[in-house]
Structure formats: C-alpha cells, structure tokens
Image 1 (cartoon, rainbow, N blue to C red):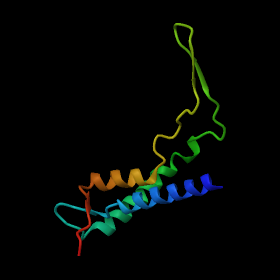
Image 2: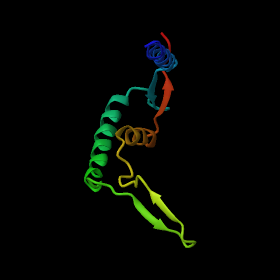
Image 3: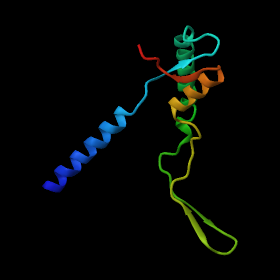
Image 4: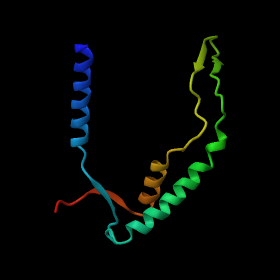
Length: 110
C-alpha cells in the first residue's frame, strides 16, 4: 500500500513539474502580427481535417505483421506496419500555418 501511495505522489509531482514548465505560445506573422491569425487558423484547421480524413479508410482494420527474408536467410518481422502517412491533425495544421509564414512565439507577459 505504501509503495502504491509513493508512486501516485511521484506521478503527481512529475505532472505538476511538466505542466508548470510549459510556456504559452501563439501564432504570429512577421508582417501582419496577430491580426489575420484567427481566419488563417480556421482555414488551416479545416484543411488539416480534410486531409487527415483522406487517410482514414486506407488503414486496414486488422494489421498482421510483415515477415521479410533477407538475402542471408535471416527473417525480419515488422510488428507495426505504417499505413497512414499523416493522420495527425495538429501536425497538418502546424505545417499549414508555417507555410503561410506564421511562427509560434511566446505570449508576451502583461
């Protein structure tokens, strides 16, 4: 019981340290500042969701491991084959915003 309680305290301390160390950031364009950010972010969000939905049906429902035989006779097993190249919406959104010239900068303190 004491070990379980100590583990919860350790996990809680690690989470508090991780959350406390995060710096808030915002998208900012070098020419426009933050004036066009909301409209561009909404457009990039829409495009990112559309693009990620294109790959939903490309993933098989059951993925079996692939077994390869090398020229020397050794067998290699790929346990988790990758089927969808980009299904992460936040990565696609970030790519879209960066391609429009935006950068993530720390939020200025008030």
